[in-house]
Image (cartoon, helix red, strand yellow):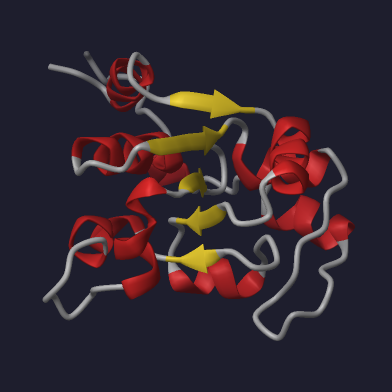
Length: 158
């Protein structure tokens, strides 16, 4: 049985990643690249990279095909375009990038370290209204807050 991080590692054999400073360079070199944010809408509304498109991971596969309620025409048309997939930490984006490649997208990469790394590199984020997000607030927002029942029990056997 695979665990979550093993699934991620398996997908990495097919998915290219780039670091935040490389993303900054890619956007300068290719302003037509599509930044695809696969977080949930509330996460996207709180903060995202300006100009990015939000398609939650849960509907991605149908969003990139015609004739579904979730169809996103810009995404469907992006099969030959450079697509940079982002999420909070860089894990969902790897799974999403893998799915896009399986569905025939030609030039897909995942942002390693996710938006947390983007923020750590002091790159700007905006809220749903397009206002700049205070990076100190973003620091708190991206800090994991696990509840006690989300932690592995001491008597848990793998």
